[in-house]
Image (cartoon, rainbow, N blue to C red; front, side):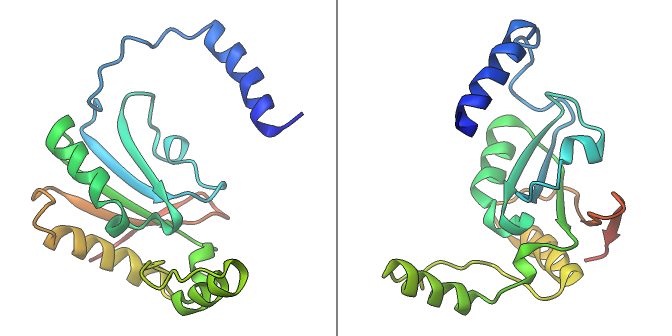
Length: 163
């Protein structure tokens, strides 16, 4: 059985008792969270979110600057008025430099991906602060509260990062 087939079976059970079809499209708490795609990170649990509370955008590293498209859509069309950026300890984005991944893609796939900014980082707190500042300065992002955190994958604790 493939993982996708396992998902299909799990969804059958979920759908059998699903009763939340009436939730409105805009997030109830008017907040967008940008977090890492790491499987050890679960923003809903870590932040006490319920279905319908927030938009959660996940990408490699939880990079706010990689989520501009989603942020603009969320703010302009769905009314979000706060942004939270969360990076985490032991992140894979700390393990390489952009030029190394460019070289790997070229070597392994024979393709040039030099036009892609992988947005790796070597300092966790600095990357959060850079994302918060970049979002605050971006003319496409509304002037709303933007807060950054580091999530510790070993303790489950969030630590606020001053930008």
